[in-house]
Structures are given as structure tokens and as C-alpha cells.
Image (cartoon, rainbow, N blue to C red; front, side, top):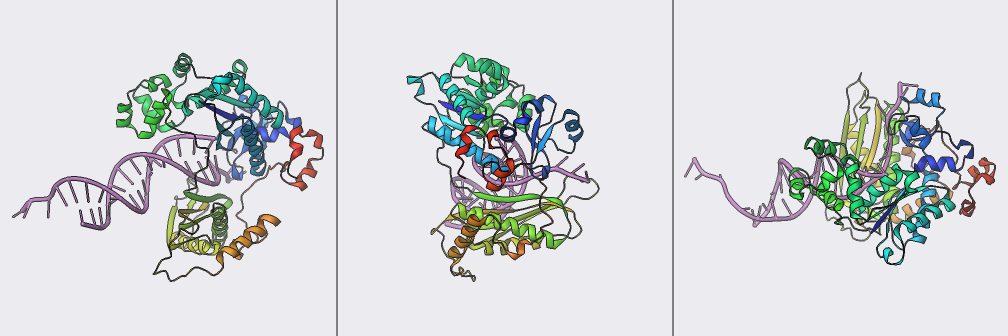
Length: 436
DNA sequence: TCTGGGGTCCTAGGACCC
DNA sequence: TCTGGGGTCCTAGGACCC
């Protein structure tokens, strides 16, 4: 038995917790560069704010309804997420963090000692008390059904109190007959369209479709979804985070780039960040690739996007190797005359520490004391703050940096920002136990 | 003027092997 | 003139998730 716990409008809620003056007002959170709306509270949804829609297209609507917009404040959301997850771990023996605001809890065996719905309500109440966040809880025999139950809990918060136990088969079929296939976890735009054309419209119809038919016309992924909807668990509990297979660092620029020097700085910075993430995972990589692209929305200019990859003979974790490989890639794909909108660095083909085999023909023998140097760099940047020590290639002015014009203070993670808040009385009780 | 970032998994097709 | 069968590995692209 699985329970899916999901925070309601997570980013927007994180912002409003610390601003009691915003109670009852529509609030949204924007993506990087203040590009798209990525979260909105219930009030904002009622105003007709379009999730995922670009901010600039909705500015008039925002002005009309008095919608408050925030830039993404990832330090704050990560810290609040941590509080939610640790609270869940206190209540449930096994927790799988699925995303920043969601977790699967292992509810198997619970039914022998207590009511599933009661435990769900206890989770809601405890999280509200500790973090001032409201959550939805969905319980069922499989992850996909638990997701569906959670979906129902959010759709009817009044009637359900935010908790839906979907372990009963009749109840499952009733709910599945109501939801269209597009609402099912794992079914996106393309597949729901194709299913619709085949006459499979409700989730119940999908659950009753022959798996051989699904396998023939789709993939094993959808077959698993169908089986899960029938109560056959195909997606197991993943308590321990698997090691990453690739690392990406990419960003849109605050303004379009035309100068090679600026692009070099940006790509160099992304390479450095990607290398830091790689070392945090205790991995070495052999593939380094870079992509650049112009805006796909610009109608006056031809679109240009390209990608290049370098394969090292010997895996590395050294920022210097990764920067130099990234620069070689960039050199191969840069074309003068474009207005670049975005670039990124990708790392892949990972090896664990000590596993990597040196290559007989590699002319670049491993750098002396590379690990120690990287450790020292990471240590200084951790202790003194990000960017204390950086590579000259990253540039100093960094005119390509992204826009974050409506950023809230880092209420829970920065002492200087805490002082800016002024009144600590505004903070929910449990938050006083912040590490600072 | 202004359209996010970071991942995973699967499949098809090509290159190559014996 | 006739040109198999069975397999692996890699990559690009598509689909999905939050």
C-alpha cells in the first residue's frame, strides 16, 4: 500500500507562509528569468492565471486582479522541502522523495493496526503544525492509483479533507470512470491524444483495455501504467536515491547574447557548476557536451540550435578538464550573427571513484593533486559562500546573468535576510529551530 | 521587450562482431 | 549469380515527470 503526499501549490505556499499580509490574495511564482508561471495559489487559479504560461502575456490580467508575483527562490523551497520530508520520515518508516514537494510513503501493513485514512489525516495535521503547509494525501495499492487518489483529494478539498483512501475496488472504478486518461500519471499530451483517437477516453476504459493491444500500439511504459491501474504494482518503492546518469546545467540569458566572449563566460560558468554537482555525486565523467540555441519564438530570424560532444579517454572530475572540453565544444558550434537565448553543459558516462581505468594512449596524464585541489576549492566555496573562488573564464561582470526581479528574502537560510524580515513573530512556530 | 530547468526511460536504427 | 542469423553497443529522438 502506497500513500502519495503532495504539498498544495508548493512554491506559492512557501512565499505566503512568511507574508501573512498576502492571506486571501492571489499569488504566483515565476520560473527562472521571470519567464513562465510555475506555481499559483487557489486564489490565483480562480483569477484564471494560466499555469506554465509566459508571464509577459498575463501581466494585464495580474494588474487587473492584483496578483502578486515572485521570482523563484530555490534556497527557500529546498529548505521548506527538507522540513516536510524529515517530518514525514518521523511518521512513516519508509519514505521515497519523489520530487521537491512530493513523497511516497510505505503504508503496507498499516491496515492491520489502524485506519489508512486516519493516518493520512495525521500526516496532514502534523505537517500543517510544523510547516504551515497544507498537503493532499492519496492512498492505494499501486503508485499510479495513489497518484490518482491524491488528484481526487486535491480536486475536492472540502468533501475529502485532503485525504482519499482508494483501496476499495468499487471506489477505484467509480473514480476512474470520472477521470479522463490525460489526468493519469505517465500519460501526457501525445499519448492521451492517441488514446482518445482510439476511443479510449476515461481512465476506466484504459484500465479495461487488453495489455497486448497497448503493447502493440504503445510501449512497455504504458503497459505498466495500465497494469498499475488494475491494482498490479509494477513500480516499486525506491527508498535510496539511485546515482545520477547525467548532469545538466543550462540557463536562459537575461538578455540575448551576440558576443562570443559573453557566451564563453556563460558556458564556462555552467561547466564549473556542472563539475561541482559531479563531485557532489562522487562521480567522474567521460562525456562533456555543450548546446547553444536562439529563441524558438523569434519569427524575424532563422532558428539556430546545435550541440557538440567531447569524449575523454580518461574520466575526470576536474573543473579545468571540463571547462577545456566545454570550450572545444562551443568553438565547434558557435556561429556569428545569432541572438543566442540559451546555452547548457551536459555531463554523462559516469564512473565511480577508483573504478576508472587509465587509458594507455591518453597523452594527458591525470593532473597532479587534482582531487585535493578540487576539494579545497569546493571547501572554500561552501564555507565562504558560492562564487568566493572562481575561474577567470567565468567573467566578472557577467552581463548574461538571468533576471530575478521579484525575489523574496531567503527567510530560513540566510541570517542577513532574516534580519530584513524584521518581525520574527510572523514566522510559524516550528521554524524557529532553523539551523541559524 | 518579455516564453524555465533538470531529469528519466524507451525505442529505432546504424555500426559492428562472429 | 547467389548475400544469414544472432547478437551487442551506441546515439538520437521522443515521450514523460516535477
